[in-house]
Amino acid sequence: MKKVPMWLQMIAGMVLAVIVGLIFVSMGISEGNWLYSIFSFVSNAFIRLINMLVVPLVITSLIVGIAGLKDPLKLGSIGWKTIVYFLSTTFLAVIIGLILVNLIQPGTGFHVPSDVKAPDSGDMNSISDTFLNMIPTNPITALTETSILQIIFFSIFVGIAMVFLGEKAKPAYNFFEAFFEIMMKITAWIMALAPYGVFALIVKTICDNGSTVFAPLAKYMFVVLLGMLLHLCLVYFTAIKTLGKMSPIKFLRGVAPAWLVAFSTASSNATLPVSIRSVENNLGVGNRVSSFVLPLGATVNMDGTALYEGVAALFIAQAYGIHLGLGSQFVILITAALAAIGAAGIPGAGLITMVLVLNAVNLPVEGIGLILAVDRILDMFRTSVNVLGDCTATVVIGRKEGEIDDTKAEGVA
Image: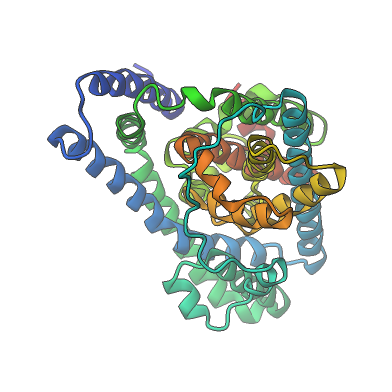
């Protein structure tokens, strides 16, 4: 009997998880119950296993990918194309969100609770500080604190130095290449557990939120989800078809394991090992492109987060009866895009950077309390869009660089 594909196993796990989750909710099973504790343990263990891979995989994949380019001109070519693509799709995402929220007006007539409180935002950095903080003062500290942007920055410089050193850096290249292969083998082992991890994560999420908690904010959720769907169809599918020269159906089948894990974990960083494996094994993208584009995209390419922040800011303004003109909405466009770039690839990070967007147009920060109830479920959707955006960029850049093996892409037809 032919082995059931991983993506199909995970879809089955998700469907079964919804059924079990709804049964648990009807039985009143929640935190503190022994059944809930079992699912909580399995889901947390699965996330920890994936997170265990992130730092060593980012370091080794970036260094090996960049150093493997060998030609400094090719390194520059991939770099500028990736940055231009990321910025373009991020701004398009916010524009789509703002257009929809202006047309549908989900916040109009919303009754703001009088006791709503804003979450603790911590020390919010300015936009310039966000870029400045990409430079590590101590790479070892960046590793221990899992500062992904700083790790990426340092790894890029190590890889670039190895490119210019050539044969002198060959021993170091061999070490990182072997380490990368080790991490990919561990990734394969952990991904064999993915259907069970996804099942436990979704059951736990349903038990935490119940089946009726999202009803009061259904219109707001509809706008966010519609915006993400339009961004997927209008931007990603168009880019895959015209720039990536690949069928959108083949693309979705190839990256299905990545976006399903992204949906269940709500973490771009945690999904990174799966994304690399999916685009390389299923879509034929070369490691020299995937190892550069995907780790960078997991941190700075957050289209779903940017769209969500634009919609949420305008929704909060409508809920408070505050009119924002084109000038203020343009500020939201710029700030949401930059705030999304600075958002960490972990669950809930977009909620904190939301404070930056609200402050930019003088909206009440306590308005964040209006969207807290549905943030977790939307976080799962926007993370899946973030990851699909990273994978789309990898295919587009891979095609432009001639780094796609179409025989592998045909394998998922």
